[in-house]
Image (cartoon, rainbow, N blue to C red; front, side, top):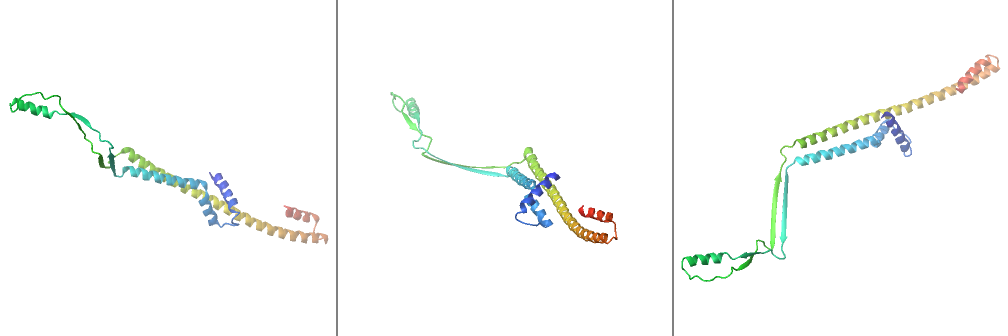
Length: 218
């Protein structure tokens, strides 16, 4: 993981170098935290977890649903109905001798419809989830997942800050070493020049000059 972070940071700084020559330590840390791919992906996971939590909560909220239905019949459906009332009435009258018996003929048939040309109906329904074990488990799991991802983001951010700080301090140390080396080279160059002059005058041996010249080359 650490090697991956260092490699990623190196790529960040190479790209950023085209638009900015130098970074302060805080600027380097902020840039890495804003552009590290693992952190970006984990933050997207947090957003997904938030959506899942809201979805689970919506399942448990009371719900009210309404509906409206309209029907229009171009031709109203009808049902043929046999006239059973008239024969029954005449039968009673015959028995009571109110009228004389006679042949009534076949019962008449007429059309009857239970439908109206225009029909409008509506409905309203309310429901609420009182208790569901799977709902509670799912909601708890979504919250735990969000907490886990948040901890992973925090850990990754700390690793990035540590890696950036170490890399940044390493560069500062190298720069200081370069300054010291440049000063040492300057001093060695002057000392070597002085010793060569002293060797010409016979004050020192050639071995002393050779040793100093070797140090200067190194």
